[in-house]
Length: 279
Image 1 (cartoon, one colour):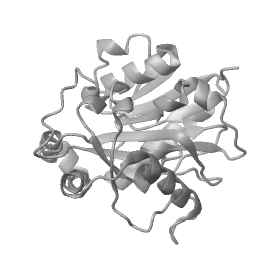
Image 2 (cartoon, rainbow, N blue to C red):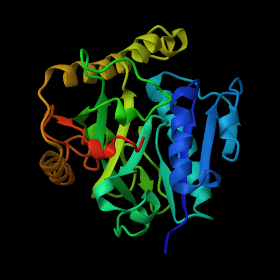
Image 3 (tube, rainbow, N blue to C red):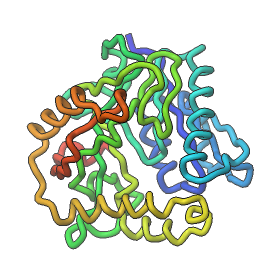
């Protein structure tokens, strides 16, 4: 039996990724099961959010760390409410997409419904997609991202506790839950597209509001993913992701027992063609 699954995100000034988020998760779960929180009373709700559950709240103030904590506390509280009607709640940033390997043959809802664990959350392996400079041009939002981008960094940062199976609070950015360990399941991936286009990153670095909130360093790190995939030879997908999943499920950094680690390795993989039409 397919379980009742909701998807939740929070957004400010980012229709580019929100449109893709609504289309993807609406297709996988039904738009009536999507919940979008707009961060700021100055935000306009776009027409493509028709049929989605929308909430507009006061802007969460503070620098990057403070605002991250404020947003995740709000989203954790909203997830708690949703468990009155749902069996699972997916929480992601607006540029993150949980994807089942097409070889598995199941939809996202079927896959999650049939995944068993005693832990409070399910994680996909983090895939930080970058633009390979000199080979890949500017991103076209009207086409699937993965038809235009073929390289990614395997990232512990994006192996997030994205799917809650019971009401527990997330840590900042969905990177962990505050109670319980995480488990990265086979054939499930969290594709992060924040590094998908260098020109978009440069434009954000020139955004005065983001700079004032301390985003410059974070955006430079995103640009670093682009430079990494542009210069490091890519490895094959299947064996490399299987190895990375085993390592991340077993290894923890000394400062956080409930976050994944991978010995600080910088590994680039070639994304298989079978993913190209999904997101």
